[in-house]
View (cartoon, rainbow over the protein chains, first blue to last red):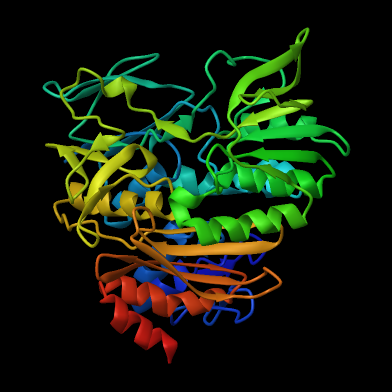
Length: 65
Length: 397
């Protein structure tokens, strides 16, 4: 799984950080998302998929092989 | 479980479909949506789309390939018109009835209109992409826009229109904009922000008439006789659930489809998103929420219930709003609070933190111009139904 985020779309809701804190974090000043892990292991996939589903800006994209 | 019908092809309906597939469901999914466009996002309509910063394609909720990969039967541009609970079928505005084993009602809301203004040139609503494109077309420097209703949609459009050089009047019928939703302090904070950015905010303003000049809109006359000349009028006075198609079905509709704490409205029928009223156990109350995040979370919860793993849907609601470069974020159930306690407000009016109490517990928090990460601790306290004084003591550290 390859994860990418669109920082320009991000609305800083932080839902992704709640669901997959190993993969996503937010910038201190404006809360915009950044990736901690672009290719998370299988044990993290569920949380990442949920993050992509609930992201209120549709700013998370997954490429699953 | 072999046939799932989803009425409503926006955030909630799409989330239900995605969660079903993610959980391994391989049966049929029929996704019915009254708009011809594949699922798109609405929050940017009043902001990036209206400002011209983003083209419509940027609003697609998923790339076309991701929608295809869900293997759904897409019925777009088609309305659900009726429901037969006994036969388990949904009737449509065109084509054969859709049979289902489980039905997801995610038909959302529509903008409420001022009576008698339907189809009037220069009188706008903002709910759909065509609405936003029509309004965008009209916003030019020096033009005059009157916005009826200073809720979040009205306020966001006011901010965007000011950026575009439009002269904006924002009308609120009550004494303080947004007070019913977020309390007077937060409402006053947002009002100051508007005034600073040149929005003419008028409170206690009740519209008596939309004035016409031939086929064009000429302005608005208020109940006190004041005339506000305008080239365009945006009516942003809230919304109404799209539930008429359920009338006579046997389901209970009362300002939304009434659901239990599992979001079930009847055997095999579930409500999702803006059109659903369900019992949120965390706050011990029924709620119907028009928030972007709730629709997605509820869609996922309903997918679990459909597949035989129902859990009470008891989220901490979340919403945000962007106005005049300030981000507003809120967690919890702010409506009906007993107290809104201002914990921080700066003299410049760029920063605000308010905590909300209902009875003896913390039920909500609202921040503006604060680092978003700060709110995570508050969210956790709300999710844990923390007692008020304890919550304030913890967050004061």
